[in-house]
Structure formats: structure tokens, C-alpha cells
Length: 221
Image (cartoon, rainbow, N blue to C red):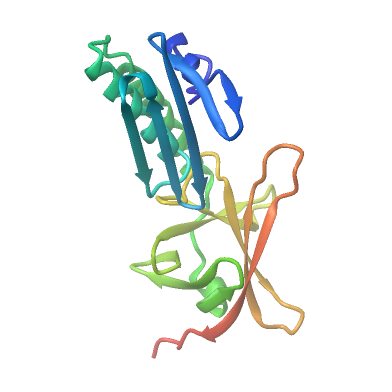
């Protein structure tokens, strides 16, 4: 796991090579094989020290920093088992402090939801790949809800102050910078549609998932 330019050499060594789907490296001179995984809102890690007969699996319901949490759990376990200096905790504190500053800056750049503007888009939706989703206002917040997980949305504004799209601002999909955004638009037949855009790796096209309306929300009396 790469924690950025401040990554200690002992951590960088754990993922120095890639071998047929497994990341191969070392920890304290021991062989280490591992593999990470992730999808929208979730991260995972499976890692082994074969010569120590040790394995670890970490699953998180968090995008972005969920991978950091899994990796930190791995390194803290190694530090405890092999009586190594407690390096990971101080590194995490530095990263978390920087994350808090970045989040404050992100929130300061977001607008407030115009409830009248989003009202026509509230309701139940479906996408053939991602399944069902509900866009709703709850407690004065615009919420993107898939049933298994939900996150609040806030508008991102363009240079003229108009709403460009909406960003997730809390777990499991909220990341800084945002990895996904939501657009409220009209389909060709004039019906409301919600599009989820997931940013791809450099050099690849972004993934766009259109959600089609299945049932509009009942207006409040």
C-alpha cells in the first residue's frame, strides 16, 4: 500500500512486485504476498506471510480511505506480532490530519441543495448493472440510497455558480477528491434520469451508469 511520498521503506517493500495477480514483497525479510480489491463503497485486503504461517483478511465498507484502513490494520498486526516499532500510527495521524483539512476545503467549495430544483428527480430508479436506487430528501439532506448503503449529496458549482453535478460527502462513497459524481438530467423521453459517473484510471474512459426512473416520489401534501 502506498501512503504517498512519506511511505516508510519497510511498508513500500511489502508491495515491490506483481506476480500473476498477487503482489509479492517482503516484511522484515520474510516473504509477503497480498492482493487488494475494491468496488464502489467497499475495500478489501488479503495478505499472507507464508513462512510465518500467518494470514489476514480485512473487509471495509468505505471507499477511498477504506483501503488505507485495511493496510494500516495489516501493518499494525505485524508490528505487534514481531515486536516492531509502532510506525504506522504516527503515519496515519499525519494522513488523517491532512484529510481533515482537505475535507474542510472540499465542503467550503460545495453549494447547498436547492430543494425545489431536485424535487422533480426524487423517486426510485434502476440501473441494469448496479440495481435499484432511491434519490430522496431526508432530514433536509439529499440522499443517494441503494438500500445496502447511502450517502449524502451536495452540489458542485461551476465558475458561474451554476450546479455542475453533485458530490458524495460522507461514507461509504464520499472521498476527497471525489471519485464519483451524480448528475440530474432529462432522458430523451423527458423523464428524470440520474447518472452516476465513476472516474477511471488515467488513460481510460470514465464509467457512466444511467439510472432510469421506475417510480416518482409522491409530493408532500
